[in-house]
Image 1 (cartoon, rainbow, N blue to C red):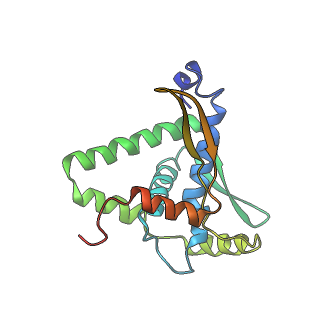
Image 2 (image 1 turned 135 degrees about the vertical axis):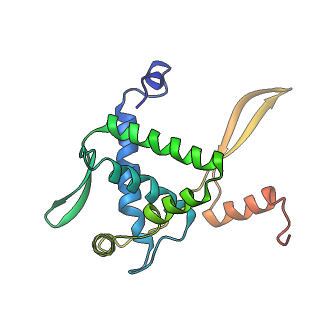
Image 3 (image 1 turned 90 degrees about the vertical axis):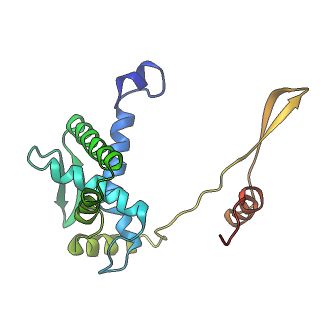
Length: 186
């Protein structure tokens, strides 16, 4: 949702940013909960990060109804009512996180994570697990990345050959061979 991105041709419209906010808020507030068992708290750093960000802006925007959790046919959905205010709230959170990092404010960091990034609403969690179970799919996904090999003519790249590994497992083993520079024991 930045006019400069449209101006330089990175995005066609602000709808790209809105879709990103939709996905981020839905994942941070609800979707990622499919990975937890009932009663568990968030332990994994990336999950804490997503929930902290989404929950913080959700809570800080309540007065203006920036984002709301709505019920339709006994199912909870995330609705963003004001993308501009949501963007401003994310900016405020980023500013606060940068302040915490710059000042080494451990007490504020702990309070932020413990308040917004750890605990899960048990009622919402139960609903999400139930809804997700009907899909019959795993909560984690892996993606095979293309292998890009330059086609050279002398010192110039004239093309790029795109191939795909035969499996996710094979790609991970190839990555291990090519990019594992650190010892397994320090």
